[in-house]
Length: 309
Image (cartoon, rainbow, N blue to C red; front, side, top):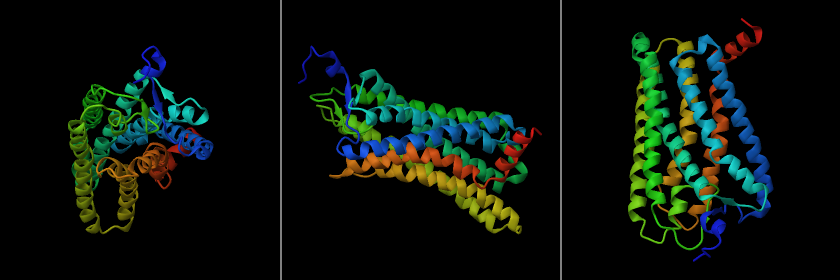
């Protein structure tokens, strides 16, 4: 047991992160900083452009703005702390800081799972129910779907955070990860955590597998509708917007399934760090590029904004 007189050591956690590979830390710092800046710039660009250009005041760009806001918050909940830990010898995070980080990382990740389902439903309504699209995706309904996404994610996180921090921790407080997350914190427990692990598995299935099934079902219906289209231009437009969404879905759900829905192995913790690094650093920076690079609406909106039209 740790010395009770040393309150700093007793209450703080040590995020081991990538300390097993000290020669990689400076390289990782530079790479992660670049991706973090790309995330900030790209997602802020989408939010500001969608707000300023009236032609982008549509359900698709409303949900895309929500996704960009999520990605901004998600990366900011863990990446600044990671950059601080990579830059110097201090790897600590306070108990309160760890609780806050755990809550927001879980909340924002769960929210994104639900929001991606909502975005797939929007594309389904646009392609499969074009004549009723404006009635189905009414602004009030869109706002309701967005609020439901955020509320469900933050509620799920509250459950996991409470269950995790009620578990008594024993011995060292070295978290074998670069941010506070449930599986790594449960490794510090001095009691049986089987119930916590089962709860995590069940809710992960609800927030990962069920959304993925719903998304694939939506795109199955979209694919059938596209194959019936006579217009080549219409097909290309649908494949452009839906293809971008499917790419984002793949970049988000595949790493999440690799971490939360497979049994632990001997090297799973180290592998999990690099997978987590991918979806917390790389994926949020790629989302704006995927959605805007070949998007005619965005290019035209930029021209109008620059030209002052």
